[in-house]
Image (cartoon, rainbow, N blue to C red; front, side, top):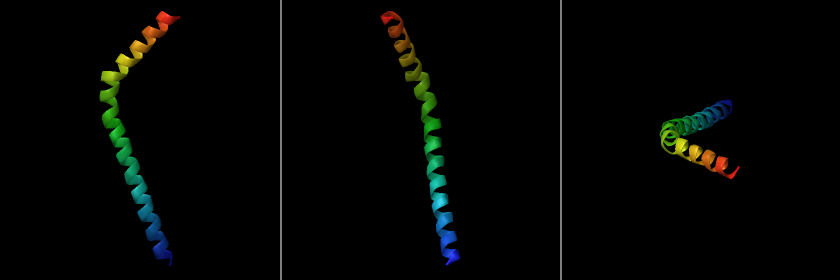
Length: 54
């Protein structure tokens, strides 16, 4: 009984950790390119438009 519970917990924990690692890896891999290309342009454009309005 305890062996089944331990195996289930370890399996679930392993799957959850694997999913989290994949999500973090994809975000870290995609974010730099987007922030460098689109991020700075959008922020600078927003700031300039805000300055003009105010």
